[in-house]
Image (tube, rainbow, N blue to C red; front, side, top):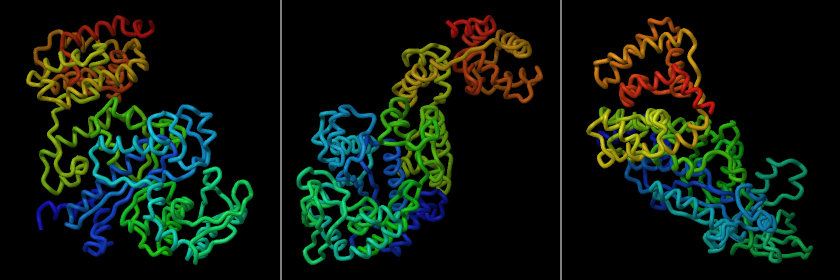
Length: 530
């Protein structure tokens, strides 16, 4: 056994913990189907949000961890429930009136309001696949519409007819009395209107594999459950899909947790073995509300990638999956800098620590070298004081600080500089609030200014930080963070900021002297008011 496999088998990183559970499930042997199947599910009732991406990213991390601890083949299926009826019109799509007219029709029948695909379901599926392909995920895409209509699901559907009473017993135990009176696990698709119908079923015929119901016009109608004529309700569909595909692992959000026993029982009734589950906490918007496809609240994948790299988003997804995460623009800079901190740490770590490092899981054990010689947060502050509208402005300062750095030799830093300018102008600039210093702060800042005017220590960030620290101590700031907060608010227009000595080294001594003079004179505060 290799050193890597030894380290992986003992790693406390959550992807390896999950991988070991799956290995135990299959008894350390290749299943009869010839592979271990990982699945993620997606409901294309609205534009795919960042949580959908998170499921695929995290499942991929577990899949790669599994492949590290054993030689059993794997597959990853991304299943889209695009045969579901559109229950409500998403708020963030055009042609609202047309969409209203298509309520309850399968998503792959609803016309595409964007006019680019055959249906709304196809449009959302294509968006999801584009996002997943951007990150280089290896997956197989399955459309529920194709799955039902092609006959691939027929065996399970016919088994659901045969075992209808057993499946219904599981479902009825979970329903309110009023709902249970009309509930059926089968949803017929009306031959006359094309809508997915939530109607009582008059008869379930196991011998013929059919159901009988009253269509929307009152006509008694009999349909085979096969061939795309009938869809399973979403909870039975969950368990039936596990049985039909022989799924070994699926993760989903906490909002499904209460239904897990239902999914498991239905899977087993239909002849399957319940998969291993991983329940993650939900993604929230900046107000702490659950991200919703129909509302379109929270960050989109495109929005994140407008301001930061794909790797930073993967890093954000890796951390604490069982803790609720707020997805809003303010988390981006921290994710970028922490990702690069982990890259730098990886280069110095032994095998045991490397497999616990998030970047191992982001890059499947082969992370690149970080060329970010300047933190992203520092670039944002540099963009602020330089009023940068182009990354070339930042490069002028970067190359004074790190003469060997270049856009060609440091492509991650070059991309980050462009992201920083964009992020600063869109989010930081509109919210900056400069203020004048109070008497204690003014005395300390004037002292700092005097020391910088005679500074002969070069652009040594650590030495400069020590000097800034000493000024704060000598002027009686307690706690000392109040001193740094004052510097940020007077000079940068924010309550938080970078390691100030490093910022001086990057921005330059003369430039910082000029900035402090403007701050003391009130020019920055007056400019902000204007």
